[in-house]
Length: 263
Image (cartoon, rainbow, N blue to C red; front, side, top):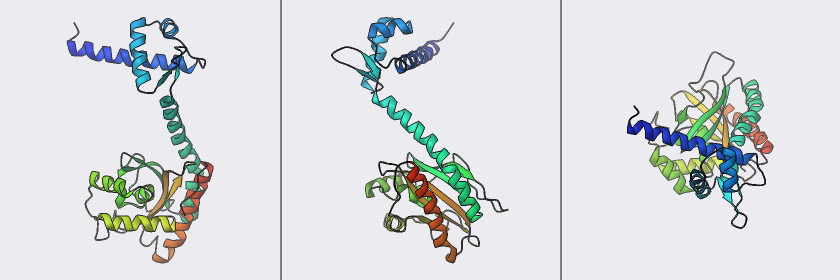
């Protein structure tokens, strides 16, 4: 015999399955469907169908025409689909440019996005040499301590940057780690001016990173491309030319997304 909590969980799962069935049904009916038609096609009680539709309409996943009573997919579903496609497109578009960057520099290259205030690595190619950086897909890092993170947040308003810093306190890796908001804001201004961000032993002693933002057609920064190496691999004299190579790679991905690069 099922416990009360088990029955409740099962009811919740059933409701989710029914809601998804309705969305899938509407996805194949571009002209829209009435409540009765949805109930009949999905083989659900009309009362349950009405309840689920009201919830889906209130959340923006379904749109109800007040005059005809017909239901169609809402803009929220289209937005989610667009975000998923953009994420897939980003990775597919970036990979050739990451490979070219590795061939150019003999350093590892990576792609990251901003998620809930974290810089998250979503693609990477290791360097062909013996030296490997401690970076992996899915890794989350505080934006203010990395080049890739600074590239991702360089266009945010001061308040947004302040919220990210407050939400993601960091332990300094060296005296170069940016621990105050004024220092970070100055660094972000320099990032916007030169078109790429620099991490000079701020995240790890002996390691330098360079990254540049990728923009969409809206002008929003949607990702960042970066590369990392040791101090001997990325010398003071090499830093500027490397930054321009990374920036060029980000510019090409931005152009393919319909956007344009900073600067």
